[in-house]
Length: 427
Image (cartoon, rainbow, N blue to C red; front, side, top):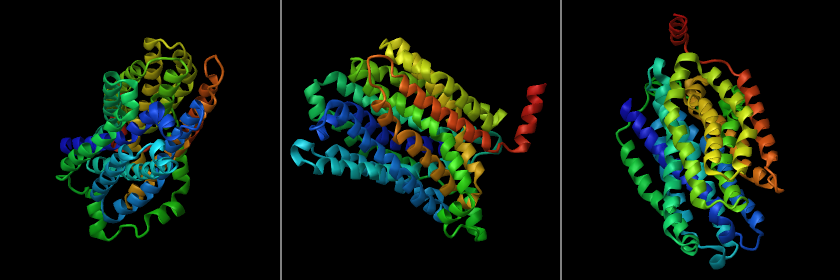
């Protein structure tokens, strides 16, 4: 389990590095480089539009790679998705700017971002299922949470490289070539991730499906016919997590640097410190999910998110580093209270024969609802000189929507695990 968890964590870290480094670049430099004829705000919105394309392609990737995972095994998904995402990310770093290629430059950016999302849409399902289906019942949320630590590691890697380059290069150097370096580095990281995954074995549950001939012939069609309500509920339930994370990591970065005049370095340090705390808290929240259940943790996280969005926006608007850090940390702790357990929760909601497709499609549709639109909606609604309360209203509304969806989902903690946990708590 240690080797499986490490390989899953490393792979998701690499793939989310690829995904996040684009978001940081979109907030900092892609607008003026690829949309120079736009106003500063419109250029940022256009850059966030290309950012959103990656979310739109993620459900397609989950359907494509989910079919592979349910028909041919979870293991092949982990290799194919990593290769696709890594290659697309390196490609982004090689695209000339608008000044060189004209309108072809942003078109190429869109295509490569689409491929990035396609690969990431398959990665999560493969990595989570390989870990969750090997894990013992009593520690399933804990072991399955390791791939969920990967996004934190990937974010810290992506922004750590951006921070180092931003601090050591002049603004002109950073805009000319420095922002490309993190994208080029993705090739080396992808090669390392592939090497770690070579020793992985297929999951016992998939081997049983293959041996008994019970694999789904058309997993996506089965999910659409028999599990469509569950897919929509899980997508709505998880939307708040995406909205919170990208409001903090992408929109707040652009808002802080462009509207509040805070330096890139200060903003990146505040956000990275909050993400590091989120990463450390992940396994502890997962252990609570193994003890008290998946659904209670998700409901608690949603409620905390709904209560914290207005304080977070107010703290951000102060432009004071410590207060911004506290606002970001509170939001991300509410986020991870939910997302630490969903890697066990979603697979348990679906039967094994369509699990890779159903869990991944629901998870990535949530990205469209919560992640794709948040930076654009937040940027558009953050006008005026006062705190951007419209952003807080938007995020609170998504939190309440997700709370309602979680309330309609069942608990999946196995009874043989839940009953001893309740007896121990009562004692």
